[in-house]
Length: 495
Image (cartoon, rainbow, N blue to C red; front, side, top):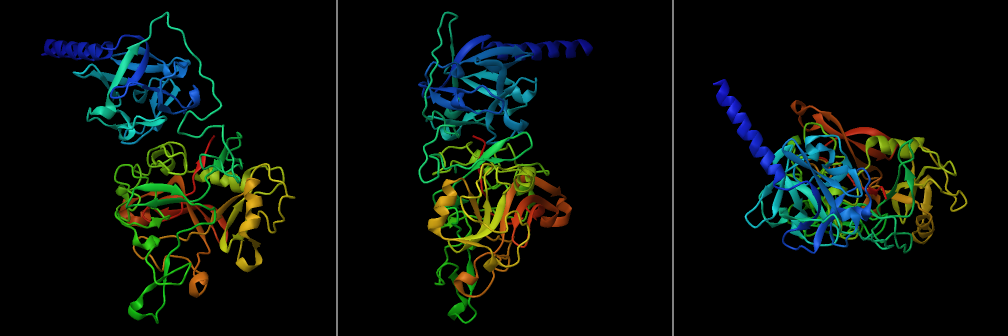
C-alpha cells in the first residue's frame, strides 16, 4: 500500500511539473488570444506594489514583457521592469471579479499560476490558490486598459492567452508619453472647471499619517438598472432624493421631493429593471457575485465578500468593480475609503490653513464641505470650521451654485445629505426636516466605508454591519449600519 501511494504521488508530481513546464522559463509577451494586438501590461507602465495589470495595445515597452519562473509545479509571472514583482490576486480574495495586480513576490498561492494548454495552442492561467478560477478579461472586451480580473474558469475566449517567447537579442522600446495610457487614474489630467478628465476633483486629501493622499470623484455614485450604467452625479450637490406622502392627496400618492409633483423617480423604486437613477446602495453592492446594485435582501450573506470581511481591495468595492461612464468608463479606477481613513481625513490631518471641514448648504442642498490639505482661508469665508456638532442648518454657511464654482476650483469637496434607505420601510427611514418639497430634503448624510463592523448573523440584519461616515447632528466615522440599508457612496482615487 505504501508503494502504491508513493507511485501515485510521483505521478501527481510529474503531472504538476509537466503543467508548469508546458511554458518554458524565459521572457514572454502575453497576448490576448482572440485579438493579439492587445497584450498584458502595467497601468502607466509602473512596476509598483498594488499597481494593476491591464490590457493594452502592444508597444514593446518593458512593462508589457513578462518573465516566467517555475515553482514546484506552478509558475510565477514576473514583470521585466522589476522581476521581484509578480502577477497577484489582489488581497488574496479568491472570488469572481477580484482585480489582478502586481506585488512583491512572497510565495503565496495567490501569486502562482497553473498554465493549461488548450487545443488551439493558447493557455488558460488557473489560479494556484483555487484552480476553479483563472485569469480573465472583463466581458472579453479587447480595449485599451481592459480590466484583468479573476473569474470562474469556463475556458472561453476571455480566458485564453498566447505566450510569445522574446528572443534574448530582442531590444526593448521604452514608450514615454504624456497622455493617458490606462483606464485607471493617471497623474496626467486635463482640468475643466475644477474637474479632471477622469472625473476626479483637483483637491488632494491626506488619509493617513504616512502622507498617502487621495482625490474625490466629481459627485456621488449613481446607477441605472435598466441600462446597467454607473455614473457620477453631474454636480457635487446632486442627490436623487426620495418621495414624501401627502395624506390629503387622492389615492395617497407620493410626490417628488424636489418638485412636489406626483412622481416615482426615486430611490424607493429600486429594482433590476428600474429605468430611473438611484444613489443609495446596500454595502458592497458593486455587482460582484450576488451583490447587485439594486439588492434589498435582509440576508447578510448576499452582501460583500461575507464572513465579516472588509470590501477594501475586493471586487465588492464599487470603485474597483464598476466601469463608471463619466469616471474613466473602466473598472478598477476608484475605491471606497476605509473607516480609519475617514477618521484621519476629518479629525487628524494637518492642513495649511488648519481647516478640514464645515457644514454648509450649497445650492439649497445641506451637506458637509471637505477642505483640501493646501486650502487657503482667504479663498472663501467659512464659519464654524471643524465644528463636529450642528443643530440648525439655517445658521450655517449658505453658498450659491455660482459661488461654489470658486470653492470647487480650489479643491473643495461637497458631500450632500442624501438621507438613507431602510431595509424595508423606504419612507420613514428617510430623514426630513419639514413639510412640503424643500422641507423634506434630507438633513443627514450617510456614506459607506469599506470597513466591516460586526458579524453575527444570529442577530438578524442588525447583527451584520459595516461602518459608515455620518454627518448631521454631529460627525462620526464609527457608526455601524446593517448591510441591507441604502447609503450614499463617494469614491476616491489614489492617483
